[in-house]
Image (tube, rainbow, N blue to C red; front, side, top):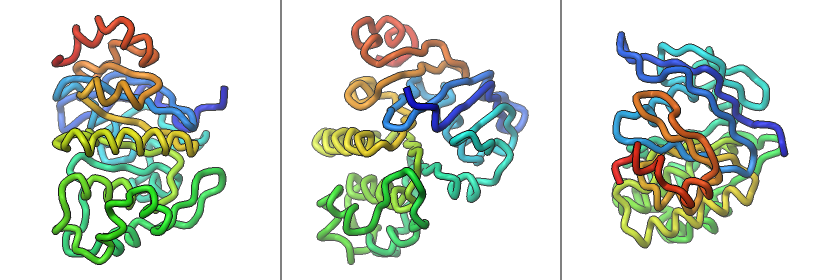
Length: 237
């Protein structure tokens, strides 16, 4: 087994006086997908935001490739190889598809795939014919693909995705699942926040089920699909 590329140990996080995460620990290896599952308010999004430094008050250890990042601002975390695709996508609607990709560009990073606009247009063929169109004038599914592609332009070692399948048509969800499996095959590590067990089940290797900011179940996705009792107990199925 390869060493963990991302390690989270005893992570606590607060929004103001409200404690959202309590003693969260997990690790993620290159070429692996870990799904964080849970109901709304379980702490999935807060976990991703805490990892990338977007939660001001947090405690615990967060390491990427053995480098401690828990106290770093988000831009420095990104430069160390963590890419984040938020649920609301945050595309620049007034810029073209091509210009959005250029915004995300970072230098190549040793040991991880190197992405260019042309390579990304091969990964997302629907975007290729839209490269000169303002991003605000493409569909929701195309915007989700663009958000992922723009993050990949940073050549991350770890890709965090918050509810990537939310609100997408089934055909687009199927293409997204195929794309994420392809990225895993490239050696990328993916941390996925998701409520959709069916979607997570086709892309994830391991799963953590969260409730009230705690890990209540941790295991392989294959074991959870074979015995979905923990999912029925803690997810809105």
